[in-house]
Length: 128
Image (cartoon, rainbow, N blue to C red; front, top):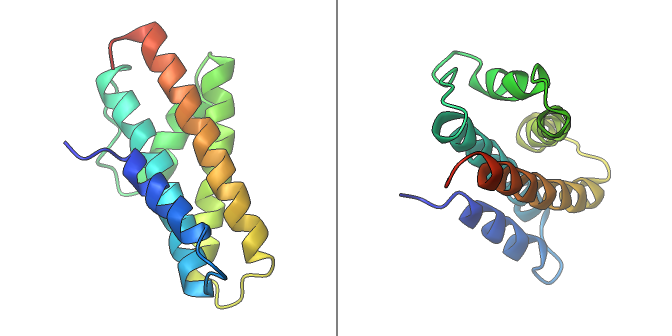
């Protein structure tokens, strides 16, 4: 099975390149987002046993499940997830992305924290 954290590793390697191009920064933001999204989606399926996962608006559905959770940790993960989704949309669709280097640093930092939080929840809820 693919390890979604490899996307974060790839994003980090792109971000750490000597003078990364805008395309590399945009790609890194996207890969960081997909690492966070798919780690969270896997958590929902394997640990929470929730499958809102094949809906037309899958990204909003995944973050929405956590946004509506009684768990403050899951609600915080949802906030970060929605922010990462915004970064990813800007990187993927906006012709002009002002302060992209900041967005990239924030996306990687947020993704690292989100994945750590999911790992913590997974350890308390299952052998994920």
